[in-house]
Length: 130
Image (cartoon, rainbow, N blue to C red; front, side, top):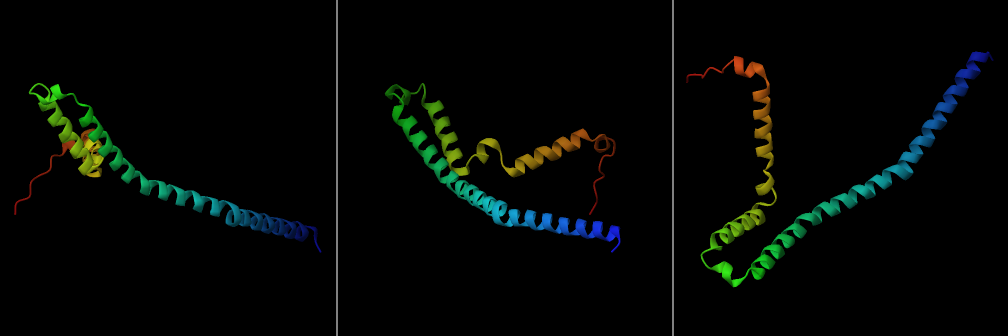
């Protein structure tokens, strides 16, 4: 057998052995570990919203209980009303009412892109007549 065929055969056998070992490590160790971690993340994500809702409810009710009686006269009544309005909006709409929703972020990004591109300023769009 020529010498080059032995080298090629040894290379192929070594490559196949390395591939089998790496594939076995992926299938037997890495993949199950990643599946467990993803399941934990999904379970944690599902539990976040109910805890936030409970926390907001408890925080608003506790704040209302701690307000002094003088707060219910005309001096602080308006700020209390604004606080309650903000709290109810936060409770009903979630954090998106405070931080902005996905549509708001997309609109801001489009406005930034439009203002950043000089071509948009040079070529005004012509209105189409129907």
